[in-house]
Every structure is written in C-alpha cells, then in structure tokens.
Length: 308
Image (cartoon, rainbow, N blue to C red):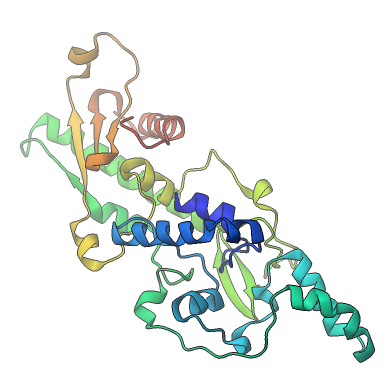
C-alpha cells in the first residue's frame, strides 16, 4: 500500500520526494486520503512513509515553509525546473513575461517555519529509518528444534546454517550493487533498487547519469527486504524498540512430507505471513545448492500476501 502511494502521488529520487503537482488530486482530496493512510500505517506498525524531502516533512508537520532550506535538488517537477532555470538567467525586463507562470506556482511571499522533534522525523525522511539487514533478520529467527543429539536436530541445524548463508549472500550482493551519488555535495550510498524515475543524479565513480528505474529494476533479484516481506508480509524493520524486541519469525521443520503428500520429487517451504512462520521440508534440503534452488523458486513464485 505505502509503495503504491509513493509511486502514484510522489516524485523524486532515493533521498526524498515531494508530492506530485496535481490540482486534480488536490481538489478530489486524494492527498487527504494519502495522509490518512500514512497515519493508520504508522499507528498499526506498518511501513512508515519515509520518502519525504526535508522541506516537505517540515511543511506538513508545522504548516510553515523555510525557503532558505530549499535548493534546486528539491525541485522534481520538470516544468518547474525549467521555469526556475529561466528565472535565473532572465534579465530584469524579461521577468514580466514569466510573471504569470510564477504566480501560477502559488508564490505568495516569504515565510518561515520550525521543525518538529527529530524523533518523529525518521518516519518521513529517507536515510533516518532503519532498513532490514542480515543481522536483524537472523536475530528475529526463532527455530523450533527437535531433541538435542537426534538425527532430526542435525538436519534442522543444517537448514538453519543454509538459511544464514542465504541471507548473508543476498545482503552481500546488495552491497556489491550499491554505489555512491552526489546529493548537495555530499556522497550518498544507494542501491539499484533505491533508484526511481526522474533520478538523474551522477555517480561518484563514472559521472554518468544514474539509469532509469525501468532499466535498473530487476524483478528476479531477491533482497533482504524482499525476503523479509515474503516471510512476514512486511519489508521494514518495526518502528519502535519494543516492537523490534517482540518481532520473531518462527522456523518449523517437516520431516514427514512423504507421508503428507505421497511420492514426490520436490517440496517447497510453507509460509504463513499472518503468523510470521515458515516450515521447511527437511528431506528436500540436504545441500546448499538444493536449498538455494528451492528457496529462490519459492520466493519468486509467491510474493503476494497469502499463505504460500
């Protein structure tokens, strides 16, 4: 839901987005509905809307605008960017030709604002909200083991080791695919999945424009956030420390799938997102290549919110 709101009503790059300039959405009170969705998501422990630009967060939380804090990077609308460039190079007498376009943008004179407490800001501004990583995910795993020393316990421990290796490997791959961009003169590290349409910032290493989201998006790639969402239905770290401490993913094991399903050659893990649990079929996960093949196919084939 939150990702859909971000795509439809906001535009910009991975370091923050303002709402799209749309009089139609404004008059139809779509932005009001968006605000209500965000409030409910935060209260119910859902994903926070941490994709706002600094100035946008300041405005919605105080109702006032600090013009001095806004730079060219904060402007994401192509038409407004062009207007700003024309204003910058315009001679004094040429400003009259731009007056109608300037006033149409809602310019009404100077104003000032003060930010709200920083403790609230991380729910809206990117970079301040913690993203899931391998350490968090493995810390949340709670396996239900068989008796210590039994053959079943050995198989279960081996699968947990496979799971740890898998999670660490997908995080390492994310790190390898990340790169640095310049944001207001400051290097910012992002991954390919962070890129959005219209993000034309330059990479530190090549100086070439960052590629479009459509070119960068690789739907067959599994990330830590993607795997967490497949397991639990959410791709974010719980917001409060209390929620993080309570957050657990139950790992169970099925040693008798042949009894349940008869003769078969492949068996997939059973995920129940509503209860944050997954059951692994032990007889089909005897080696890491087998584990990798089955878990990858399972994640790629069943990403929707359901019991898969």
